[in-house]
Image 1 (spheres, helix red, strand yellow):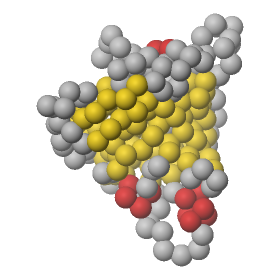
Image 2 (cartoon, rainbow, N blue to C red):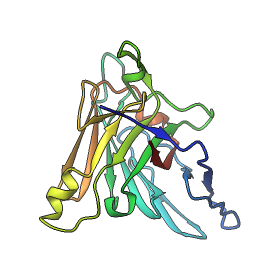
Image 3 (cartoon, helix red, strand yellow):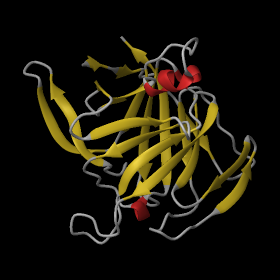
Image 4 (tube, rainbow, N blue to C red):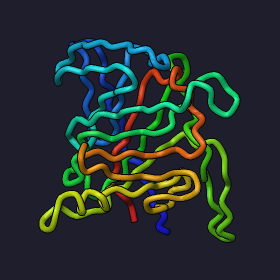
Length: 220
């Protein structure tokens, strides 16, 4: 397993629904979603900003990463999960991601509700590791990270390339490859998307109001 650090110089970019405001910096992308996702109910809307149009509804968000737009789809658990009556975010799908553009970058996703600045717990997983004893601390993880490992696609089939393109990085900064006891990632060649499965999901679907994604180069 490999430890990763993110460049502390990463800056934040805010994307606002007002066409007058457009803050750009190269590292971190922030998107504010102006509607709640309410279980199986579809809340859809469209609004314009200076860099293009954003549409969202039924758990689909659009964010900008690696200088391109990607969609982030949220898929729920059953309506009653683990004895609780609210659906949780069971899996997260990355649609339209270009691994050629993102190679060597770690993408860190965080989910927020409409009222607090604290990231929502997403899943039970490794949040820290004692490097001296290799002891992992398991808790409520608030960051979901993928690392684009691949070089630019040059030969063979694209599906084989893309299948290996993204690995998972836990909240302790350790590259866990394609799965561990808490997370798993798969590539669907028919849709060209990656789906991250949360084994023990924590985040209610109805709580997700905005998503941030930070793009930063790996620091050795």
